[in-house]
Length: 150
Length: 401
Image (cartoon, rainbow over all chains, first blue to last red; front, side, top):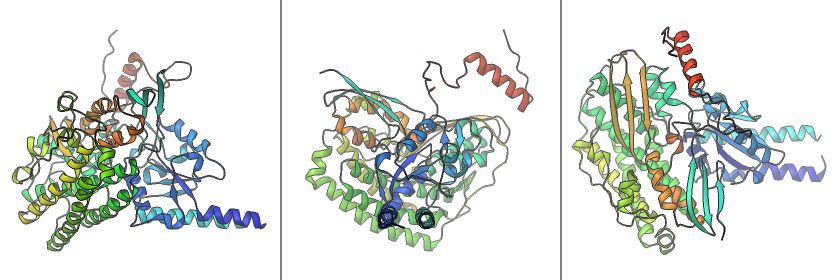
């Protein structure tokens, strides 16, 4: 691994910036995501920061089932993000559609429209589970990056 | 200067949920605002008709994760009214208790979001830290931090014991102390007062005319509170006052909400001292007799309204939900008029919008070539429904020419 790519990997793993997008969620996962960012849980200690624009973000955090009206927008937001990019599906609805599976206006989980890197189940996913998911994602990326550049 | 129309949303840093606003501005001044709803529409009302009453309760709870107890209680009240069930007094008190804890968590959440929208992130971090105290209480009482599922048809599912009561009273004392500090900030911090005063004004007449509900109405001095107007659960036996304010602006809405926090603490203390003994639920039939009922509930955001129609089976025939945000959206349009574009996020946030509650319908998305994508016209829709009922329910509707 060259020094430049080593530095790049280190920087990427130590400051994953996230953008949160509600694709039709009931707000429960959304408030748990924000709770994970605030003092009691504080994911900022892993360098995670919430950003407003997809162009600044490395990780797209999706919550809720994908509704028909939002589907195009999710894809558009995903396309606006710079490579390398990852998607985390928070909550059972984002994983599979959850209780809304089969509703007429639902496409299904996040993976029906964009590729997903990590799934965090729960209704809603607790802040502890969200932190665990994010840390596991970062760890797996670190391992993959190291294997690829060996 | 020429008028410009700016689209805001569905993805926008100031919006926590996907909703599309179209703001027409002249320079920095907002002339008018229109919105497009439906990004969060999941089809819950229709899904309710496919599930039993008990399953519906869990589905209805997931209309909104912030006011989940609101929706489940409102729905259950309507079902109990149709079935003629009288819930035990202890159950009514515990329902009110969870309702008030939910109000506290929602108002603290709002305080943080409002702070964030005006660039006062310290307030966000402070109030969300304190909110965790309530979340712990809810987790202790119901087993889950959000989507509590404490209701069941005919009462509640979990009882509370003396240890719980002691823990709640202790936590409420801490929260009261913290809220006094927030009231001090709201009434003395000059930057906060100047940022919020005169922003998003809604006069008493407009609030009445546009049908505002909840803290939005009460901040325009309109004492509208379902807990007083049409008491449900244990509120008829509790002593509390409706907090109103005469500022008519975002500052007034902040004062109303922190005032309501103090009222909620008082209500919780009353509930816990007067908690009656007895069973927590009565046995409910699986099938509900034919009938219809409308139920009202004072959500943290305002009056929530559910309509349920039953046909004698174990599934409802029709469920209709009117969430408080929908009632307040007309007022938002009025509040934004002649305001500045920079005030847009805080004016929207000031009604404490919850679009996942609101989105009960969808507006067809226009296709590039002018056609409505995937939309059926009336005739096609009717044929489809007739076929569906024939296939799935064995009902044969005749098609008239």
